[in-house]
Amino acid sequence: MIFGLVVFYESEIPKILFNLIPYIFYTVSLIVIWVSWHFNRNRFIFIVLPLLFIQLGFWYLSPLKASLLFKYVSILYPLHLLLFLLFKERGLFSFWGILKIVFFVFELALVAYLIYNPQQIIQDYMSVKIFAMDTYPLKDLSIAVSVFVLFVIIGLILFGNYLIYSGSFFVMLLTFETGLYFLKTPHATQMAFLSVSIIIFILLIRESYRLAFYDELTSLPGRRALIEDMAKLGRKYTLAMCDIDHFKKFNDTYGHDTGDEVLKMVATKLSEVSGGGKAYRYGGEEFTILFPSKDVDDSFMNVDLLRQNISTTPFVVRNNKTSKKIFVNISAGIVQNTSKDKDPFAVMKRADNALYKAKKAGRNIVIKA
Image (cartoon, rainbow, N blue to C red; front, side, top):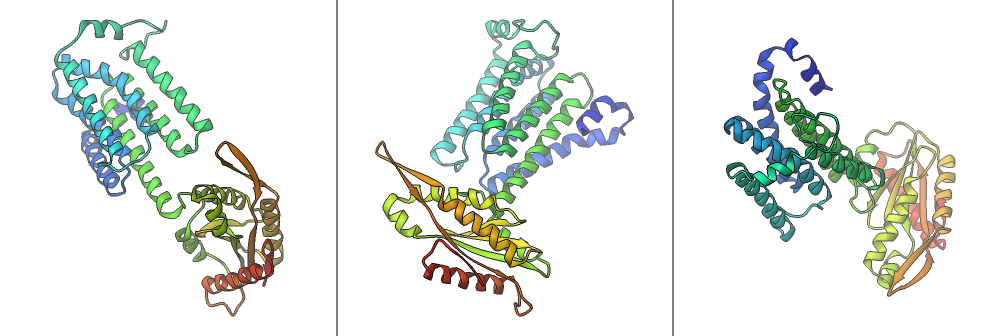
């Protein structure tokens, strides 16, 4: 929205703000690089670095070379964004991380070579007319590549697992292409690059939050999120501790990879808890469900429904081209806070004791204490 205001109301904005845009862009980009390095989210480094090089190229190259840079990056950067959206996170100096570095250096070298050694045949291919409408200053090939990348990202949004990533990359690409399209509008391209860097920074902060508060395997909130939410509880709440029955034996029989799949399946079922509850992965095969402002009777029914749902859902174990249906059970202990409880951790301790009683009572049961 801010980018649109700059494009259409540029004459009404104080000039001093436009003078600050490049410095803000460099500052935000350097912060993104530092935070990405610190949190080992190196894909963001490879996304923001090209913008820095492009900006410097627009400033310091001759008009002819800058126009060539414009043509090449309008085609290559959308593909670059798509590739680094698809690449999984690896250590920067791991095998895959080094491959990313080599690929990025190759991109830089290729663009630099084509700028300083223009190839007429490449210029002819880039000038091919595809659309009836005029897309100046962008070439039709650039528009076609961007549309292709946008459709791929839309597919990832609809069918992928990381909506926040795909949605953010979609907005970044639109912002980047819009900035190039309004090249003749003063400060539009600079503002577009700044907008992209801010989107990356927000995405990086969101990713850092997810890593800190969400369990990577099950995607449920983790123990740190549970502690944060327990600090916000009111005078009445109910807490349940849940545990997968015979999980160690299951791991020993079918392997840890299959055990991880069971954890994810159970976590998915627990995340569907009704009655205002919220599920967390406490650790290992143990989960916690909080019911703020709820009494134990209503919460008990919701947890018991979860137990029944899990126990009647078949889980398919595949091994050596064979498959076998098995059933997974959980036990749970559920309690409501009282005036005698000093804090939520005391309530959790009582729920854990109730869970222990459920285990001794034969498992696949919810004990209300």
